Image 1 (tube, rainbow, N blue to C red):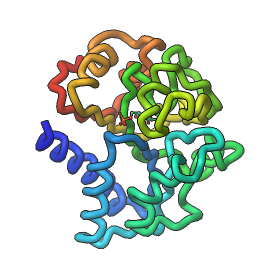
Image 2 (cartoon, protein in one colour):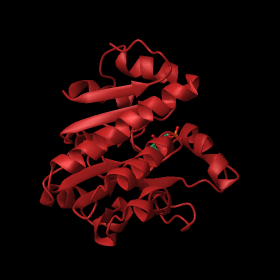
Image 3 (spheres, helix red, strand yellow):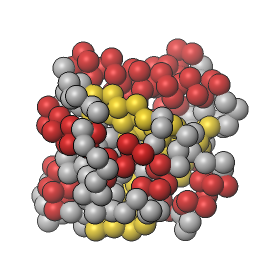
Image 4 (cartoon, rainbow, N blue to C red):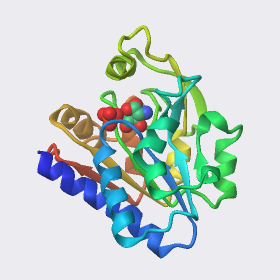
Length: 226
Ligand code: GLP
């Protein structure tokens, strides 16, 4: 499983590196969490090895907690795991909690070229929890208890885990030219199969990705994806 995860992470990093080489300006949707960590390590390696120029890459975080401590913010996560290593200019580091109209900003930059996603155990993408409508844009949301429980290890306790966040909406994500979803570990097998093995279901927001014509699902849990 580890080798497969590393291989798939390298593939995702390669897709990002390729678009940076190919296009003069690039707009990326970037995730946080445990899943993309290996991908970011490969991306740093490729940047150093191939001299990738990030000066014209606009990085759009998928989501952010509302009023997080600096330590726990997704901004810090991306600085620590990517931005500081590859030289993303501060002005190119976009975060939905720090921007009044995130969707307008994305549009003004020409739209997302490539968005990388993970998947929550309840099928959420970014922080779009079950029940989020297809027609949804960047918004503040209440985290479901299942999501808070999954995140609580980061905060030390459920009580300390944030209850609110701001997230790119389903429409925001689906507006991306192309999408790569990463799902690693047997604990994600069932939700990946439910998301992609059946029809579109708002109770499993990841299933909305079936509406997009250029989605790659990179998973090591051997799910049969319809
Ligand atoms: C959080 C993030 C999602 C991420 C999910 C899964 O909910 N907002 O973007 O996909 O966690 O995280 P992990 O990759 O750690 O399982």
